[in-house]
Length: 308
Image (tube, rainbow, N blue to C red; front, top):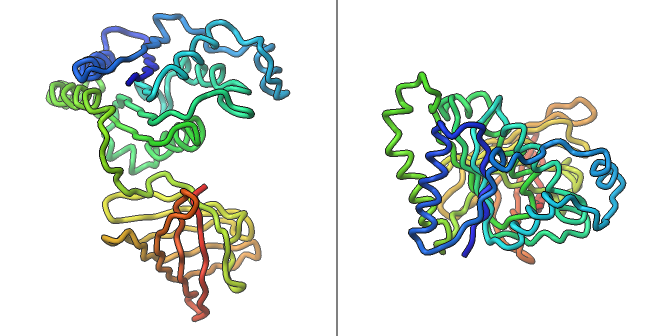
């Protein structure tokens, strides 16, 4: 098995570089292979040319792809897993990595009539100066996940995982205290990268839309739900169609059934609320929830949502 590692850091004197090396050692010790694109060492050109922009903007599936971009395409299609290792700069990847996506995710390869293979997994490993609790508290981690998983890797990989090595700024005492522990974590992640294991059921960063709904319901096929999960606690934001903005929060039981309260404001400016119980099932390879809901005013109904 082979992993394609896209590494982006401007300095060799960094914690992120040590994480990369420990991760690679884990891959090789497990008897697997890797391909590395070190974007700074390669001096990868992050800026799109006007020609590249016009090609993608006009949806032209032509063969005039730059050599450096074509090489990255070949690396992707020769691999089973793609891994991105980078430091967090202002809640984003470094500009060179953002530019890598701008150019490598070209029309006809990553979207349109795609030539990009479906990869088994997309793994993010990033170092962050802030503690993960702060990143979660202010919604920054969720923003990073949405960009990487909801846009860049969306429908291009079968599984996703986001690992943050936090509190790594040089003035933070936890950087040195947790150094060996974090390197061990990176090594084990590389060593077990290709292990087959039963998938953990989670709703984190999964998107759904409604297939059907009772007449008294307001959710429709134009409504999109973005779910999150931490332990047995689940929550989601939803909007679209007649829903301006909505939120739900509740729990998941041992059968993966959901029990939550919801509230939203519709396009008539009305605030509506209720409770819902949802039962999971899989149809045509897609996760669905069969929902039984009840407005706070007493009206009841059923709906079905399906993962996008």
